[in-house]
Amino acid sequence: SAHAPHLRRRGVHPTEGPTAMKFIAVPLLAALAAPAWAVNVGHLRARATQSAQAGDAVAAEATARATPQDLDECLRVALRFIHGPKAIKLVKELAVDYCAKSRSPEERGIVCPPFIHSVNRVLDSRPDVGIVTAEGFCAIAEERMLETRGATRVSNVGSGPLMNFTISESCPKMLEAQMSTTHLVSQEHAPDMWYIACMSQDCGHHLPSRTKWCNQNHPPTHSMWICESARTFVKEQTKLGGKPLSGADMCGLYSDFVKELSVDVEAYEHIMHADTVKRMPVPNEADLALRSTQLVNDAGARDLRAGAGDPVLSPMHTHRSTGAGSQVAKTVLSMGFVLALFRL
Image 1 (cartoon, one colour):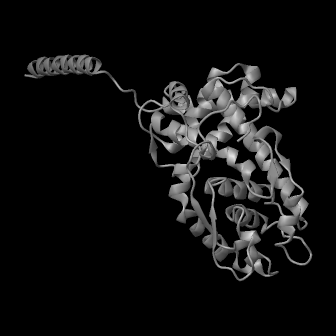
Image 2 (tube, helix red, strand yellow):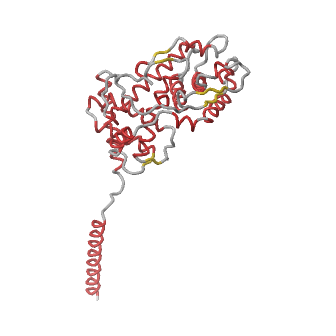
């Protein structure tokens, strides 16, 4: 697939080889056409997930793969902040601290926030108590970074690479066809509607209303993780509620989602692969200074907490301390014996 010029071409995508799969999707968007679709949204989401998971193992095999060079470059950096097996929650904090300490004050406030966001995004599907090594982190992160390109390939939504993604004219029409007669959807239900539209690939909304299955021979255009990430983004953007959204409003939200992905990917590749940053949003001076200071303060606070426990003494130090303690004990006993003689 096409990439912006500054985002280097990494990994191998299935359309570059013979890999193809038969993707099965249920006509979920057809079910959404009823005005009362929101009543059954939980069931529809479950069907969408089940449908995608039916071919998910094949999709994972067929989607973009990180090259040995990608993994090697990532590992060289990851080993600087992940030393041995670590809990997922701790790895997120270590990534924050590494970026804060390794960047200049000017760069820190620009690159570290989206880098941190990218690390959280790729690891959020894993339990915080899970354990990962530097090698495991890179295997997860590199796969997810390549999967982000799939966000631009959701059918009837838009086209172009991450940094230059453009919403197509078909996007509002495709969504409004699945809404009620008012062609509006509540902000409460917007996240689920985007999730289901995304999970239906390029199949569900073309089906006759009574068709149960859709069979298509083509490589998967994007992963289930992209749909879950889109739903999370839209949920965050609509959490305060407000007026119902039109098809154009919904497509605008997806455009913002892809833009955020592109910034996260660029920050990640700058930190982990030393790629040049060219289109990173730059905050004003006050916000930039505040971000930079906050990152350094947070890293320092974690260092203090990490060092607040009892010091771990070396065996030699422990041996010497024990010897000194024994000598003091002998002296005290001797003095007690002398005082006892005087009393006699």
